[in-house]
Image (cartoon, rainbow, N blue to C red; front, side, top):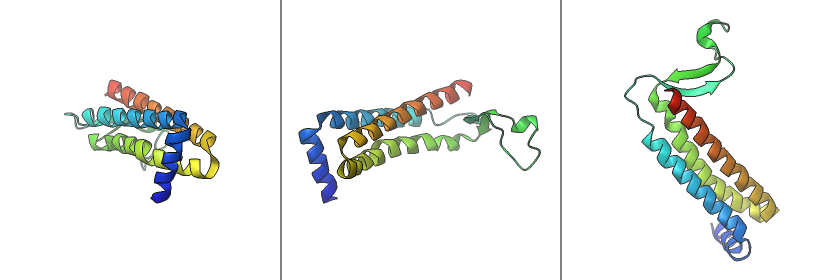
Amino acid sequence: MKAIAENFRKIFESHKWLLVAQATLLVASIALFIFSIVNIGSSASVVKTSYGDIGRYQGGDWSSMANSGGYHDDVWTERFAFPLLAVVFGILHNLLAIKIFEKKGAGVAGYFIIFSISLTLATFVVLGRLLGEG
């Protein structure tokens, strides 16, 4: 824990752009967490929870229409994956970026943070499309 605090202090003192990128990731993941928690519940018993171009095998025939690609129905509690992703992106990825900074430097940590921000934004898009179809 002491090494993480020391590396964070180095980032704060000499790599302001990385600190801004980490703050952006944290804000985006907090927004994703709030957005997903607000939209998690549903009065319907079956909601759209995922999308796939390839059908799902459900113990029957692979070629049946029920197993074809498209939006998949499930119970609304399956959407708890989205707040979990927000926590992983916001907290775990920032901590991983500090460890990457320690081992590989600011450049690689910056690329990791930018990749994490893009994953967070992609998760927003996926959740928005699922909500629009439901």
